[in-house]
Image 1 (cartoon, helix red, strand yellow):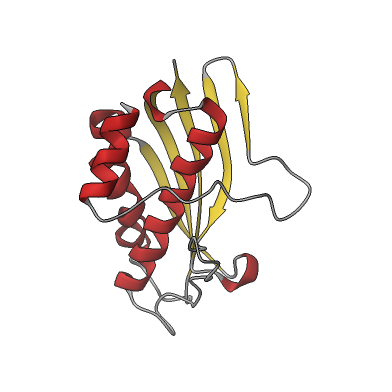
Image 2 (cartoon, rainbow, N blue to C red):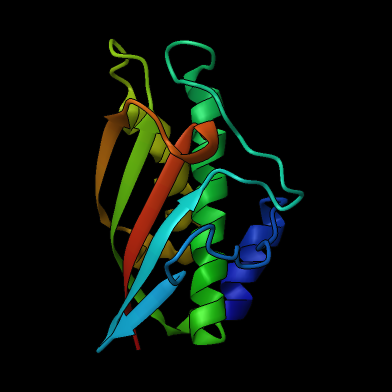
Length: 154
């Protein structure tokens, strides 16, 4: 699946970034039994740009979807770092999407679709997952989106 997943990314004009280093006193992932849990990945591009702004205030849903997509790429990069290759992913079990949102913003699910769509497009049925999409008063460094994940592994 690694070749398939990375080939799909290439077809989409995307590539896996280097797995981001933790920003504080935590590890980027843990493995317990057959579950890989990936710490929250913020919307930071491979060139170090933070995708910031509050949804419903300074930025729109399309901006948030791009931020969510970048988070999903970082999740896949962490999975590759943890597992050696993406073929060991059996199922993305759940993602939790956190959206930096104005108090009256209600399109959280649309924003996190940026990550959900990427995971399904790259991993096929193994990318289908349960999820939460919630609004937050703030996120680290003012980023628009942060997402964590639980993944079943072989």
